[in-house]
Image 1: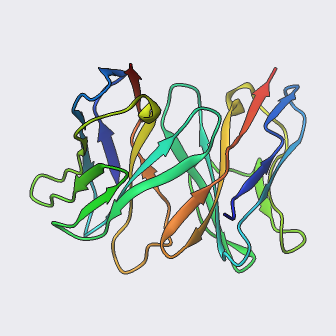
Image 2: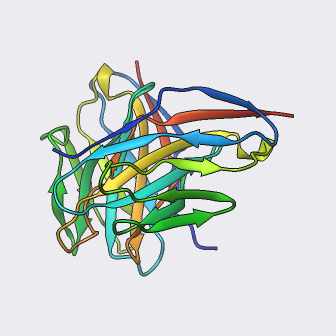
Length: 115
Length: 111
């Protein structure tokens, strides 16, 4: 079945540092790929998404590119802020013409940014 | 901004008791989902619901679980006889424009 693997955490950075959180996936066909973020005490919020190969999703300074050849969707940000401290989840929905299917999540990566 | 609302935020129950977790999806959304996250593990899909019936369910979603949309606004997850291993965070989501919107979750603690 489909699966998502994220880099092990937690990740601790200083403010303004560069962030990469690796994500790779296994899926048949052409899944849609997502990054969700969970701030303390809140639900999962969509951060960005990409629905086909070579698409780049971006939001709030975060970016991720759908790489079919390496089955990856790594999350990057050039300069993190303390307010970016959260748990980040990589996820996919199956391909095949519908995006109404279940989300398959990675294990989540805890990011802590210090001033 | 519309949001998915879940109640209660924390539910404590005794093993063997029935619990009902409640969700109010975003108005006009048509697809609904339940997920759970056991502490330290991945968020796992439980069930999806459309047009008043289950459209997909996982192996986890056995006969102990049921979902219902009783009144056109609420979407509930019932666990008939809770087990210790049901202790987890339960998330509800609803779908629009291919994006699932999540509630803040209900933490279920089974003692």
